[in-house]
Amino acid sequence: MSLSSLSAQPEDPLLHIIEQYSADSRPDKIDLGVGVFRDPHGHTPVMAAVSEAEMRHWKTQQTKAYVGPAGDRHFVTLLGEEALGDASLLARGCGVQTPGGTGALRLAAEVLAAAGVKRLWAAAPTWTNHLPVFAAAGIESRLVRVFDPAEGVYEADRFLNALSDAEPGDVVLLHGCGHNPTGLDPNAAQWESLADRLAERRLVPLVDMAYQGLADGFAEDAAGALAVLRRAPYALLAYSCDKNFGLYRERTGALWAFAPDAPGARILESNMLAKARVNWSMPPDHGAAVVRLILEDSALKRCWHEELDGMRQRLTGLRAALARGGRIGSVDCSVLGRGRGLFATLPLSPDHIRRLCEDYAIYMAGSGRINIAGFTDEGAVATFLSALREVLA
Ligand SMILES: Cc1ncc(COP(=O)(O)O)c(C=O)c1O
Image (cartoon, rainbow, N blue to C red; front, side, top):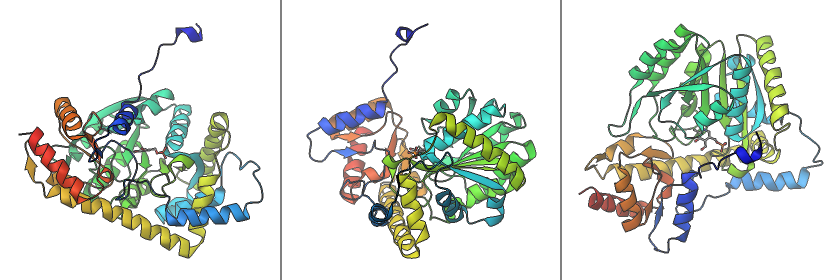
């Protein structure tokens, strides 16, 4: 065995799309492949509250000494209160800061693996990095086809039925809101049924909350997660601040572990800290400090919430414009109006996707996933709909 035995790993296909898009000189090109929020100018802005908090941080920061494996504890406390707003749930939970939502998921996977968990159940399709993160920690995944992007429905019963085969202690991955890649979230009744089934089968929920505030509203977006977390004696919540604070490259997130009581949660925390120590040792500080400064100051917090509301309204407006496209061949655009958040998956063939790119300069993932924020405005939506009519004619 040596390093020379390794073979090259496949390139991330989205990186290839990004390169192709940048090299395309057609003026009306549309980039629906990106994974980040974009404003009507096609920029991913630094949010105003973030800029202000950064300025305050530069002026007041006294040291660059290590933050410790748990990160910024005040950030974690304030974020937990803001995101969940449930003191009794938080009293039986412990949180640690992580490098982004991915770091939170990886830490969750390592703690679960250390606890002897072998299997993760997830509804398919799911974010492309989910299964590799768990596989890297030695946890196998069972995927259950639940979403039908063509019909625009989340078939909760299929997932509930499949979970009858899960063993007590298996982990169930749930997207908190703004499902990536379909934009289709369970409704309130379906969240309740999931909470019931998980409790009945003694399964451990792992909620991945990467888009709070970008789906239905900040508090509304936590409702499903809360329904599940409150019912489960043991549960995990992986949280990303990278989208809702626009902090992407600052790698800002947290992982909470919930137990039946506070002493149980402290045991889980000590395991999270031990795993953090052997992975990144200590998380980066900047993004968490910025979020803390925003959440500590009521005026700054209001400014951030207003901007986040504006981002969500932009997505809702674009979704409504897309929905007005009606049915175009195999694509029922009204489904896009029923979805939430950044993403939707269109039932398009590889040939349709290639033609949209080659003939109309419209770029999207090979899976048919589109980022709604990739449309600068309703004019771009109209361009897209007419290209879709041509390609699907
Ligand atoms: C569903 C989901 N979970 C987690 C993440 C990871 O977020 P982060 O960039 O904070 O690592 C993403 C990012 O795209 C995501 O879509």
